[in-house]
Image (tube, rainbow, N blue to C red; front, side):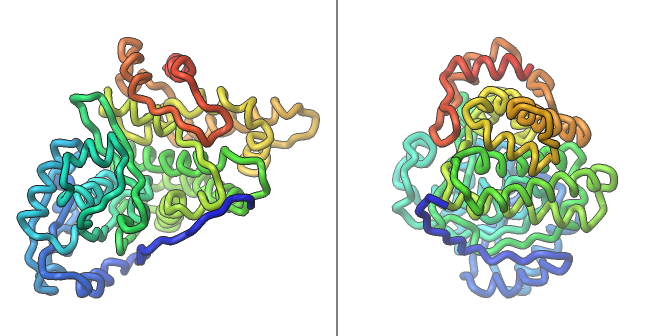
Length: 388
């Protein structure tokens, strides 16, 4: 490993069927005012809402609620949540849901006491918080984003046609996370599959960079192989606990900063996917699956040795009698076969993207360093065209 890094993750994570039992002990560490953050009615239909409210009542907490958090949280919803959190003088934001709900709670945590406009401060200017930050805890109901154990937060501004993520410092990472894989059983099939590819691409975006012998890459390969294996079982039987537990654990480790240690990283697929999401409001993981094959074929010549390694170590491609280019292409073909097998979106047109939207997507795509090739706007346009 050639990089220099500091690793710090303050999140205490409780995992397994009895994980919710840990909530009472976690609540004891915070003041009386808790703001419960959740999405639609699924946690009420499942009974989880009642369980959480009972734990809050037993702990003597005063509870305010931010409900209706959407799958791509908007800046307007952020402003609404900030007002509720300030009014409640919140000591803790308790997010119950998937990545969007937890992302949103982190945005509220840094924004409620922001002196300026939090959209401009944190998402356009990328400033770091200098104001009071409200602690966040979470109860995960959908695996994919890894938001339960990281400091990332993505907010959409439809008026500006932008969907922007900010990875804050470790002070914004949730202080505790409760992960019971059984809570993910009720997630719709489409969302489960989107979460699986979201996590897979998180790993890819940290894997496809660098040329050194890096321990993080060996960890990434193991995580990808585990996710592929478990995904096949879960798609056939969504209530297979072992498969869903392995998916949940991989999703957490895919983006809790561990496998980025000592690495440059390449988040360009996410930048393109988020720009598509800003104009279509499509499910995040599916925006990634739609563009990832075209993106990786475009950068493959610039990082060919790693793509050969990806093919042989993750997909078991036999190298005998093949050129490096043929091995690398066989690896991407194997990835696409798996993607079709589990049923993720393979074409951006399926998400509602049209050629008329290309200009807005290109404009909304941030072009990043860190990978094997930095894209130009014309590269983004070509990737969109190849992804349709």
